[in-house]
Image 1 (cartoon, rainbow, N blue to C red):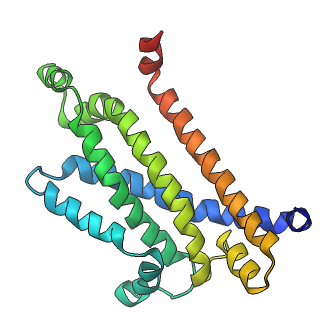
Image 2: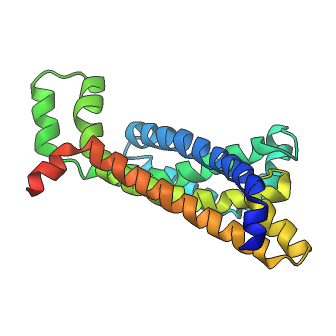
Image 3: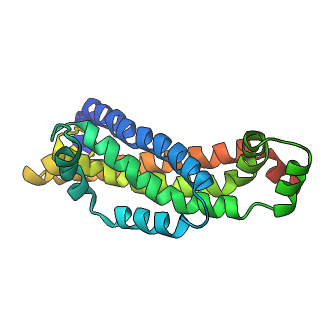
Length: 211
């Protein structure tokens, strides 16, 4: 506790960096996964699902250090971490997005089509709003894993909360390691609650239907 109080400025700085390398991939991955899930033909869905499942199985550190050889980025820095975590979010969210769109009431979608709505209008005004509960559920899972995996970025030069694990372990300062654990736990809870509140705000008809 004393270590955390004496180093609060460092913890805040590392937390902000951790949020950056977590939330940017989460936002990008969410959008890309939703688009891919919506445009992928049913005949290709099993192959795409298998490909994303294989990507998600790759250890994060292995992907962080492999990207420079694959795409020519610098070995150290946030670029590799942001790209890799975006791939992980897409891989995780693709399954949730496919399920969310597949569970839409067929009668509602057909009614919207019969009303003359275009493909884009049906997507933005009918399908996407109805899919929000499933999408938010997938985003909450993706957020938890992304915030956790982001800490490994400290190994490749990203000074986020993972730095507290490396430095604390090397110097045998276990209060530092514990501070990192608590900080990651807290931001994971805050992000999860924020996504839950966002889901409630975007689906007011769910609340009114329970009254």
